[in-house]
Length: 317
Image 1: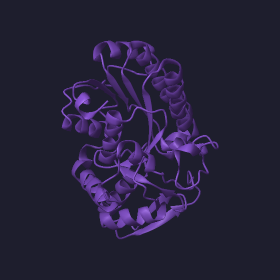
Image 2: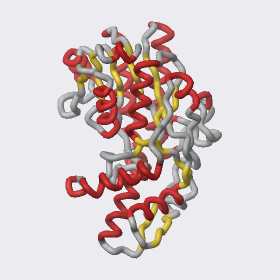
Image 3: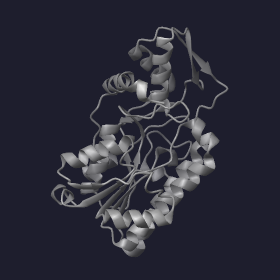
Image 4: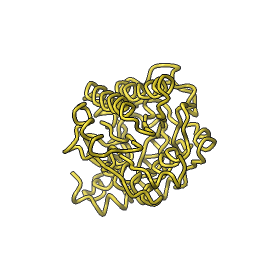
């Protein structure tokens, strides 16, 4: 499926009203795609088969990009492991099955970095996906999403169904989720430092000991990778979508503190979990298979995200 073909297709983007989804929609529109269907959660609960069938009736898509997910940071994963497992599994498995039954031409399944084993060698290579159990705090979520890879490959083998599977690393950028109860580390830290600055607080408490490392990809870059794969990739291999850049949580917190202008000290709450020790992806396959390479520099991406939060914080819960 090439670029010229894509613009003439009806494309359904589940989760298209969300953070990553808004960038994917933008990338599709830049390519001239006219018919984009975005199912709203208020109208379609994709955990329910009846809603999936109704959505497929309404959307009549040629292509589905499945971004919708129940997600959250370490705290949310620890509090709602059953919800994260059930919701993500049932959404994906039923949607892929019904899409195959309807003769959908292509299905793009979005996995998660949390699917990798806890002690995967750095950088994470796609061939290491099955070499161990995921990090415990987000294993139910990670395994539920990894089952979509098994399903994609099985349906391709038995039915010839064109379902590809992509593994984005942690996302960040303007429009991210800044809710303290469910946000990931970058928006959580940005909010903490900006609010501490406003309140003249002497210190900010950060979870863990700062030693874990993480990789982050700017959401607009991840969206470009997803759309490139939709255009150009029709294989069974899982493919990482990342920036190939690793930073410790300690260095990340200090960088965000500096970029927000916060002058107080950082206090590490070592009673809180660290999560997976290290995360960084091997991104060669995405470049080799469909020419994707992240463009945004990390400091500039953080500046834009901080600026977006400052401008929109009054309407953020």
